[in-house]
Image: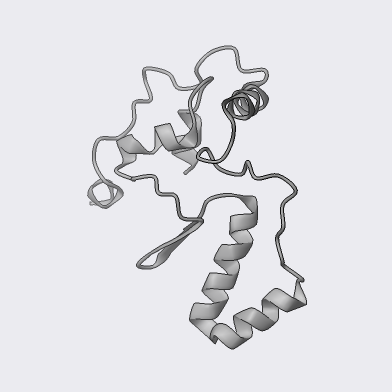
Length: 122
């Protein structure tokens, strides 16, 4: 993911950057692929932790942990995904994320790898 972040520049999202790495963006908040679990954002990290707790210790334990941390999200706005956010909200979010960025961070010397991580490990 660090390599992906290096390729971000004004107008580009992390979703735009994952393609060269063979990843396909999905709408799920938590994705489990074998031994890898990923989350789609800050509060989704809590969802991921509870998912992992459920897999390791059982649903009853995960639900008890959710109660312990009083995790009952009820966001005041419904703009937490590109599908839900208005176009002006998306534009403002892009402005916030790219504030101070004058040019692309990626250089031509650091092209996205064309092989998979498994192939690079060989």
